[in-house]
Length: 258
Image (cartoon, rainbow, N blue to C red; front, side):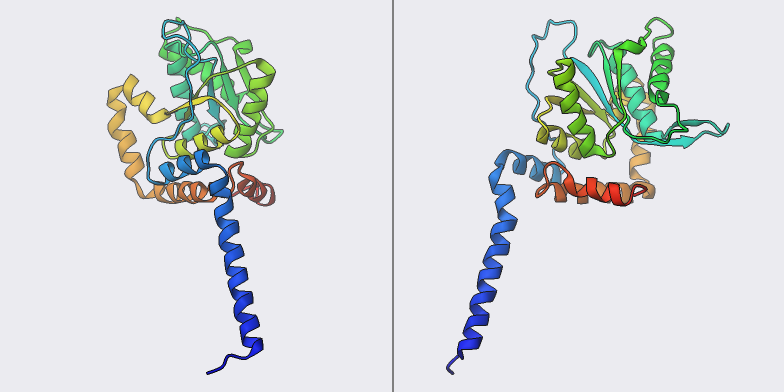
């Protein structure tokens, strides 16, 4: 059977479009193999890090700053606005890191919040946690905490962190966030050139207080965590083609409550 010219033209067009689509899909991963390898490792559930130590082990502080991405707020049983539960875990772990002399200061990537909310709510919570866990022996002064209030999501958290690193001459970070978010957070940290070592807040807390481990394990095994984990997995997949997180940032701008 002889194929007509129109059919041949359509076939060639399909081949060209298919080849172009494959090329475009492959171009981004192939243009930055380090980023691609980090994303693939994250997708397999493996640790992700681009951290390079800068200071000798005998230094008093191994990092320039402890970094805590923002999570959100909630209402307490008493009707007060407080950091949400996952943010509380991050801040508690950061307090433990301060007590253990991991860094001389803290960067709170709180991001944009409502004008009705105290812009230093997380700093105050952190300072109280430090005093409580150290039994009053350690006080973190206000000037040891940088509060960032312009970012809107994890990607812009890391973008702002890179700007703060230049502004304050910060070269190394201890990045503390929740276990479910840690791989995606480090992907963006690396994409924006932040020399950050990631640790899960839950692990820091369980190491400090082993009796908490069973509850935290139970939390992560609960059905309520499934949609959160799924969202993170989708975010990791999207980051393969969107290293700087422009897509989730655009979604956040259009749908701020998502």
